[in-house]
Length: 248
Ligand SMILES: Nc1ncnc2c1ncn2[C@@H]1O[C@H](COP(=O)(O)OP(=O)(O)OP(=O)(O)O)[C@@H](O)[C@H]1O
Ligand SMILES: [Mg+2]
Image (cartoon, rainbow, N blue to C red; front, side):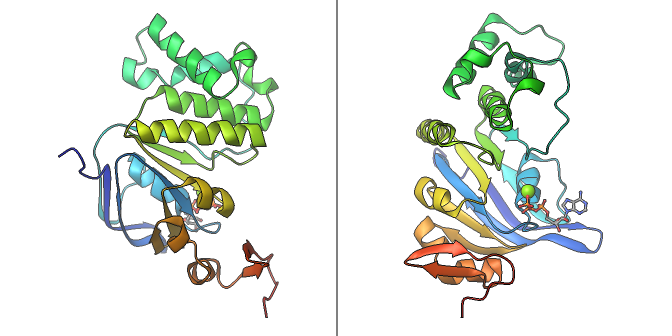
């Protein structure tokens, strides 16, 4: 069926020992949509992305994905001290499709170069990734994810450390992927970005607090429920209050 969901998550529970990272999470991810995954630290965003990718096994419930998946991992500092260039990293996106043992074809190199250009990194293609800034590395990883040409693209906080031009370029890329019928799930801590750029938002706090268009899923009551009441209305703009702040 042409408009069958891209992915169906049904009563998904993931437990690590006694701790439940996800508790009976259900949702349908449509084709051709940018879905924001929003929630506090420890809400289970990364766990849900990894369950969709298939690298975390459900404790209970099911995850069904129709199509191929691509992943951009949440970045930690360090670990970048290897002798690969930005172009090498982008090209890795083609490996799963091509097979690790095959030499990359010219078409793969063209795709990698196009992806680096799309994220504004063409002029840095030959630089060793250890010499790039954090935001530039993030763009290179986004390029690698784009080269995968996945039906379901899972991006774990791709905008952390991004400057305004990167964010604008990124949003343009998401729009293009959506128009191609791909589904992109983006975890983020940026409520304003999710509100402006996502078709749907899943507000997560171990369980699904809300799922729907941003105006519904990110309303004050839902945010307060997800963030434990630490949401403050400042002149009509919702902001997350720092720990210990009380709105009244
Ligand atoms: N491999 C693991 N082993 C044990 N506990 C884990 C593991 N992975 C995640 N958890 C726990 O599961 C919960 C959800 O973690 P997860 O990384 O999915 O949260 P998150 O929403 O991505 O948070 P953040 O915003 O900080 O990235 C946390 O309590 C975390 O400690
Ligand atoms: Mg995470």
